[in-house]
Length: 168
Image (tube, rainbow, N blue to C red; front, side, top):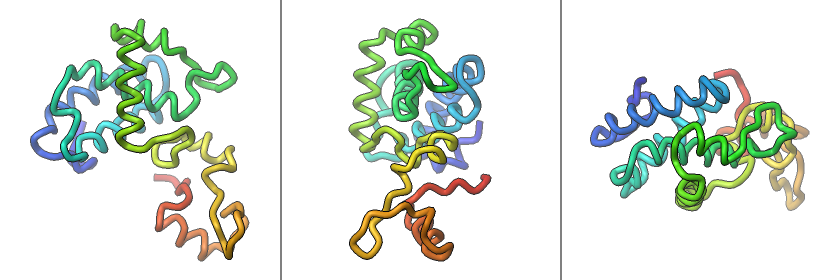
């Protein structure tokens, strides 16, 4: 569980590794590896924030709230999704009260300015199937970036205006 690849500050590496263990285990058992990777990215981003909210509080709560936050970004609570879980189920499996989960997840989303289908923390299938992350302004018009020339798309990806769905 290498925190170096996520550029986690030295002072929070141990805590992040502990949180990664919790989120990885939960995602492997109840979700999938992509959710696990997104949770790691989210935790690492929180660790790099100044001051980092991870420096205080119960690591189990941060882990469960990260799962809840990533889940809300990816419509995990929508039964029509291929991977579905309720907030009550996350609470049951993590042992963290649902009210604590939802409050801490909201704190995370607000702190990092996250929203549903956020390109940085969305599953690849969700990004590929939704038009929202692909909408950009071009010459004063809102267009689907996938219809633009390849060089314009590459520049938009470089500027992180659109998702990069190339294999990692």
